[in-house]
Figure 1 (spheres, helix red, strand yellow):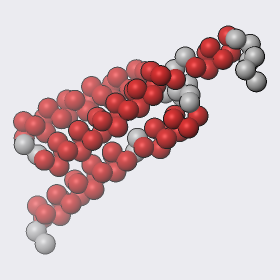
Figure 2 (figure 1 turned 90 degrees about the vertical axis):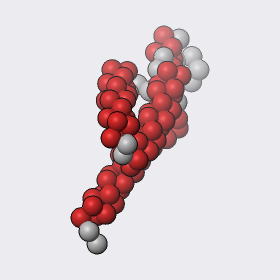
Figure 3 (figure 1 turned 120 degrees about the horizontal axis):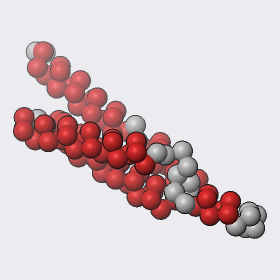
Length: 101
């Protein structure tokens, strides 16, 4: 096994791990219907970083990082959608005096 193949396997595995890292947060946000623990600034900076890395990967024509970043962007986009949908849910719940209990 040559070094280039080994590093391609490592890069692919790392990309998949990075993609999978957002799945637990997506599941938690959807299950609890709350985005209180998510920072909008964090999500914006994360997406900006992913877009910059994706642009570099496109320039280098590195398929491993292109696919990994596209998948990460899609999953983070889902998380942003959930954040947008549920971000005011608990504030509204508190403002209504917990009448829905």
